[in-house]
Length: 290
Image 1: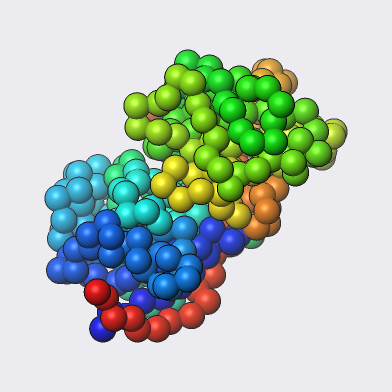
Image 2: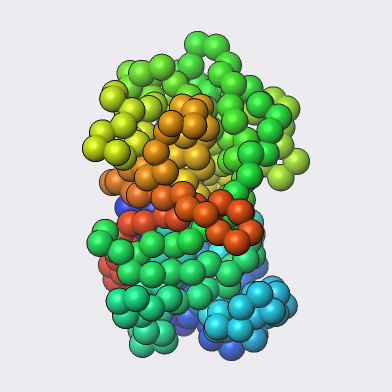
């Protein structure tokens, strides 16, 4: 039997398995079975809680920041390995704190290792804020086809530790009319795939100094999810890019599972983007693995 917890961040849900010493490696088919919503626990992905000293990828995290005691080994629902998950980092941090594996007080920082580098987590008014690090425009301007859209739309490639393509739509009606049961198609096809965000800027775009965006997302290896943390910051960055130099650096992004915050700020190595929002642990249990 394997003990697990179930958590979510604005509806983006995860199976959480504590494996501090890195003894319980999971095959892709086992991850897919655990994340299956009919025959397993159900989730958009799996978070394995493991000490950075217990796995090869953790060595890079410790070299970057020796305070990154814990490593978030994240897998998509189909069992594939993913570089990062913004909602997952918040849920991971919340699990560590709730389980007594880490502490985080006001003004303190919790460092977590990921395949995209070490992420710094702090407390925020709406839950937790994660410094997602630097970002870049990936370029390429791929065309996105999706069921419910009459014609392909151009997208903007944004890399925030994992790849995204953000596509602007004209109205809430277009956003609501998307059929994301079927995977959207990108041309050209990115070498490693990409999460695809469809966004509608707010009207007005800026209110009380805060930019506003509505978003739906199709995550590679998962499908449509209620929320995607890296997709939220990618969407805010794309809309700010399109809006021009007068656009704000603070954004609220509405997703089907709730509202998340994105904040851009300067760092020694370039501009950083932070994600803020809630995280919850909803239940614990045990399951027998095949």
